[in-house]
Length: 260
Image (cartoon, rainbow, N blue to C red; front, side):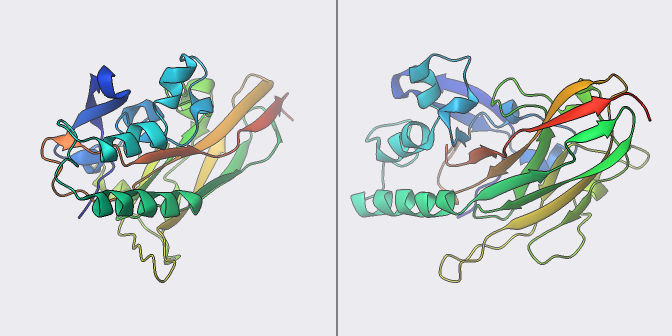
């Protein structure tokens, strides 16, 4: 069974307090460009705090317990899990919780820089069940209101340096850009990642972004978002299973001072 990080057209089912979505056939492999966390509307958010603008009950409805596990346990359509036995349902939830508990994403960045200075920031991610994980560099840990960091005045200089779980450089995602287009993307898909529960092997990635700081002094925030899967779906028909996840790193506050 396979899951893909899908950019979706959302179809809300209010009766189930979660979103079931039509998965775009080509998945994100065709979206070799900048993206933001709202694009993964079929994914469950690991924390309700990522959606402070929403009523509390709706924010909780986006978490795995309600968005994913409630669909797994649903006994009627449109849930793609209706034909599973109780043991199969329990196994899916157990596997997802096992993955969630071991998935992490961190961001390392300077806390103080001069205006227009060039710096490097590093995102380290580990977890999910593959075969790919997605990493985004955004301004806030907000599911539906964060923006790519370029919106705040940061510039990404050149292609990010990417490595997967084997530690080797990886350019497959960036090579998907049309010849002549810049490769300084804030969203990266790390591909060809393996998962083995028994061996405790998880997808992993290390992405280094070279940035130019905003020209206007002030206090800016940086954050990394990780998109990953917890199950592999082959029988979901036209419906995307809500088994993906979005997890944010800790926000880092960066003070941009006057040019040196």
